[in-house]
Length: 355
Ligand SMILES: Nc1ncnc2c1ncn2[C@@H]1O[C@H](COP(=O)(O)OP(=O)(O)O)[C@@H](O)[C@H]1O
Ligand SMILES: N[C@@H](CCOP(=O)(O)O)C(=O)O
Image 1 (cartoon, rainbow, N blue to C red):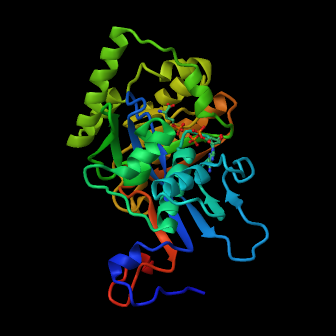
Image 2: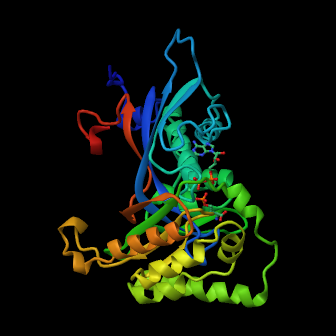
Image 3: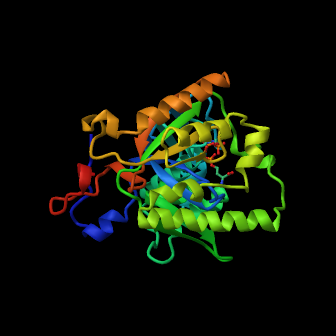
């Protein structure tokens, strides 16, 4: 049963009290957009939900992680799970000991496929921990949540869009992580081929050389500028050039994912604005434009998603790779609390979803 916090507290005081249970929704993300290795990422309209609750008094099981959906069996069920790592970081920040907690994940983000399941878990854990601990972070100008999350993950291209949604440009300025939102052109769709096999980011980072030539660096700088300009000006024809990369795709393509360049070529030939390796792979992401409102209400001859999807599926077949094809959108909103006990809403103020 939902308990309410006694009315002797002001709303501000009440919101800073710890909670018993919280549910956080976190989006998938597509990092390394084209040349944006370790810095440009996009939030994907595909969400997991994590509930973290304090163990009730007298509970004999104590700490527990349960999961359903994508990667439910494979994900760690001990303190190495990023949900716990994130939650612990939040309690550390609040200067409070981590209490025994129960974690339940409804996982819809494909596990270790290049769609940011690990960053989603880190951010969900941090937000859940902050709410349970009743601790508020400064955000405007200092973006403390980003500092904690990127500090754990080591790069901002997944965690920034998980937190803020949309298309994010993240850097480290030597002291702290910064991220900025880039315009999300209306009608952009994501056509995503997700192979059935796992590709761990740690392994895929291992195939990259430590140095790059001046020519390749210049190539990527120009492409990254073109990419951001294309998003900002809605000049989607330029995404084709803006998504080209020499920093990680050629290495990962030749050593790990032979289908990568043929699939990019097939998607672009079928009408995609661009295609690239999502995160560290094995997923391939194609972006198409022209979705007007709900795509199912749009005339098929005006849609490119079906042709691009078919071309990517055919390419996977040619390479003997099983997988699934998902069509979804860029999402402008990031992680959020969807349920909390006791709730934040009072008799006076009701928050979205009545949380
Ligand atoms: N809650 C979690 N969800 C997903 N991955 C987790 C979680 N906790 C720890 N991990 C680790 O993160 C790895 C997945 O991350 P990664 O290889 O970067 O792929 P992804 O692209 O899905 O983020 C797993 O192999 C696992 O070792
Ligand atoms: N910049 C990182 C991105 C990893 O993304 P993921 O979704 O595969 O975890 C890298 O290339 O290693």
